[in-house]
Image 1 (cartoon, rainbow, N blue to C red):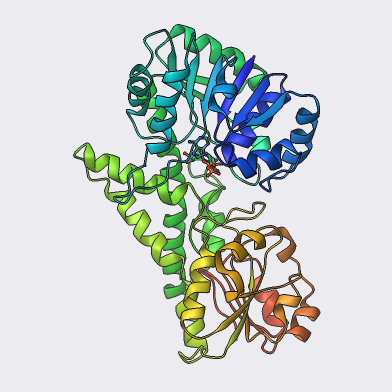
Image 2: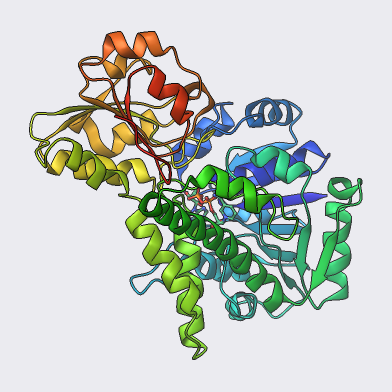
Length: 436
Ligand code: NAD
């Protein structure tokens, strides 16, 4: 099948590459000409495990192409995916200007039947708006399908190639058939393709992300309580997670959720609910808890240094909003850095993949270390903000010899409290006892 993917970011590039991998001919369209040039030259623009190999293979086989021209991109395509940004507008609702702008342009270019697919996360009713935007300039046949994407950055290729489920929102038989054929190779092991109407599909994506964000904020509140009553959140987590109805996953407390999806999607669902004259009370609390949790370590750090961080030097491990990605959108580490710098401290940071992105944002406001141990040199304390695997079992002797103080503030509960206490560290984490 010939496919166009408009928007070649985290979702678009994975979508385009994975569809090419199953034999389709894919053209990815992006307005960013530098990105298109780099991709056309075989240079991958995001860090996503396993993606580069697939990308290079399909580029070489000419199944994957890149262009800045929407006209060239969609000319021969039977299916046109929209993988465009839907950032929060000023009032928190999803801004549809990219989606509707491109849809209107597509309307000017259409000459025959195509299926337009919303892969972006969009509020209920967007498929109808896309239809209307296309209709402004095109009176022929076309379908609009809602096909929300559930991939997780860091394991996006696996998630795409072997999805837990594929949601296809359409009331058109023709659209349903085209989408079913396209996804057939991805669900051979029996995972479901769930067909529904467009509105239900659109809401499914927001409901999924908001439910996951709720799980995180719930555990973070349990962690808060643990710290106050002397319980251990790890024990509580194990205790509740073994109940099938609750499940073991997504129960880890920490310094809040970040990234380009949860914060904006929870906010957008609250906003959509308001517009439908419904107060989504739980989600307001989820956001409030997360706002506080991002800075959970700051009061602990200030207390430890008697409220005086001026001249103190911090090592920071982890900048990405989660491990295995270079994505720093809404990363808790950025909020921590801002607080530390505002209090007069200095920061030396290390992240295996996200340093370039933070450097573009912060320039020389902080020091970027060569490796995790160099970041520790002369540090008064180490702060851990992202649970990269390489931070889990570090060389503690190296840590001790590099740092000024044996002090760790761990926002991701990487270390065993008893083990670290034996090594003589001052150690504070989330929802567990502190060690001095
Ligand atoms: P992104 O910012 O990484 O990529 C968007 C791309 O669209 C950019 O390359 C940008 O240059 C391009 N673009 C902007 N305007 C354009 C235009 N007019 N024509 C062509 N290209 C244009 O965004 P993303 O993370 O890939 O997210 C895209 C959508 O998918 C969002 O709605 C997001 O909520 C949703 N989503 C994201 C994830 C994720 O993990 N990142 C997962 C599921 C769903």
